[in-house]
Image (cartoon, rainbow over all chains, first blue to last red; front, side):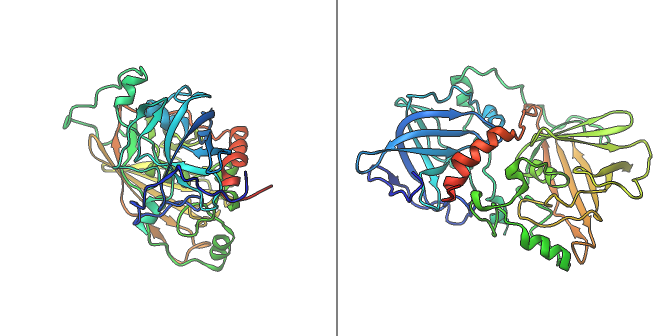
Length: 131
Length: 258
């Protein structure tokens, strides 16, 4: 899990719309990857929430991704609750992947989030999670 | 640099108002009607940030040898010197207090803050870490030889319609900002708040810290907007939850195995 992770063919590289911006030291803000998988845990924790979910890689092996999010307070203001994701949900979410190549990402708020086929969070291109 | 600074924090995931209805959340209070009379000497209310620079300004003054040594020892996880989260030594990553003025910079750039007037104090509540500070307005002087405190010591007075806050007694274990700039226990910090209309609060700051910088650092103007629809959320930095986050997100995100 902690070894370098080859992004599966199923993932869609969305290009680098944020070329003028700079990310944190952890995430590559020039990349955006859309992932689909099954939620294993949504930690509505402080100071950062985190979403964990299983994604099949190119070989069919399940890889557990960890997605960094804002604090629950910030998320609550946007209408999130600890029940926004629950274990077993099929989700599609877009992230800025870790530069280390590990299965870790920062949510990319410019893209919508699907839960069980339904869009529950619309994309907002005016303000990215890192911008 | 401005873009760099703007990009450094993992900012608000405000996904639009439609979600409120989908999640059954109660309607937010209506925004105030514009242009009603206000008392320029009343700063009460929740103020949301309009600025994005997480420090005084993008022009850092030259540092002293002491300041440079502190700066070089800092491994920030944001900004132009950023290392991956699991490799940094930012005090925020272990939930240490941000202290002043760094707590204020976060409210300037990401979170809202609330100000409350009482007869002898103005209280400032920060969302990050659920922290607060008191600004004494009872005419007292600053302590002459203060014990360092995370939030320092602050006194305020009105100069016309400007609320002028002087602070001292900071704890040099804090970083000045997210970028690892230093602040010493010799620092003097001045804030000038001006409510230019009912909905707009401006803030300029001056950091005078001869132990860390060779000249005073005057901030750019920071702007807040009155935001009665927002309430300060409970954003503690919870050590146990933060430890789990470090182990499960920050460390693997940095390729670190402990």
